[in-house]
Image 1: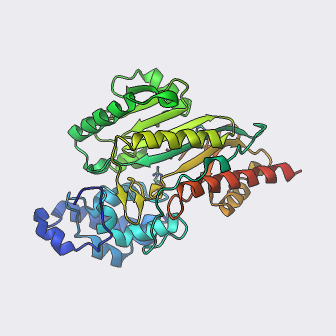
Image 2: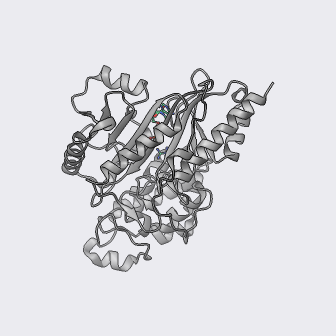
Image 3: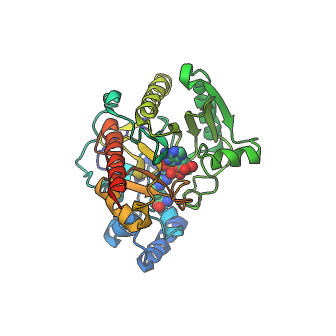
Length: 378
Ligand code: ADP
Ligand code: DAR
């Protein structure tokens, strides 16, 4: 079965044991046993801790995927970082099937009710013209960004990639990127050999991914760094592609101001150009597959960098109001960062169980509501 075409068929640990993978190595079983003790003793409730009950653990402990991915490969980040919000990643596409007793619960919780029997709708970018500018006077929104993730069919995720595969994927993707034309025409910059000050400036300007994320490090997602990693962008840095950070590809459209319509349209056109040349992994129920279960389905995160001085004066209230519209609040440098100068990254939280259009519309409508609340406050 091709790596990417994962069926929802219940995994059978016997057949996986019979496929020559044999037993999970003793040292891994020992890691898992001590990991379970650490999790049970931890006061922090990550989704991993919440759903890896002792019963589920016993069911999954001895399983592995055809590529040899174990439960330890999937949970090690959340055990090493007990303060994780989620704490679990899929080491390869089959993990979503083999370890479904854990992943299905995490997915249902994070994506607000996507159940095991649910199916991700077909990709639907909708009518882009129905998406507007969330802040036409640019009073509140500093910039707007829409990103999606894609995994190359036939390749595992970070923990199971070899150095040769990183190089192979980078060569394959950068060749396709070099052929982009029009608004998407640009240059690919490998991380290998990139001057540190150039790299840091790109990170500070919100274009490039950060380095050394402890959650990804503990998930074995940073092996062979910086080999196979890089960034593509057009001249105006409004269309960008990250290669082999957390996901095989992160495809990004962004620009200053609140013109979500322009940002979304550029992303859709860019994805359509790339999918003509690259085959992306799609699951019959989970949609587009990604390393982290929080990004499955549409994989869309539509965000604004926004200042709401009155509403954000009470952060807890702002987060509560945001969650009413299924929005997530991050700091000004994205995930796991603080808000500097009252600047917040607000985006849709749900990525699965709705279409691409609905995910972007959910952010569009929610941000407009937050701005209206800000305007109404004395
Ligand atoms: P991802 O969006 O890929 O999940 P992060 O939350 O780490 O990852 O954000 C990646 C980068 O994108 C960070 O530098 C963040 O500040 C930046 N970013 C997110 N939203 C916006 C936006 N609306 N405008 C500009 N930069 C943004
Ligand atoms: N920091 C990890 C991952 C959470 C989701 N964000 C991703 N995938 N970038 C956690 O468990 O908190």
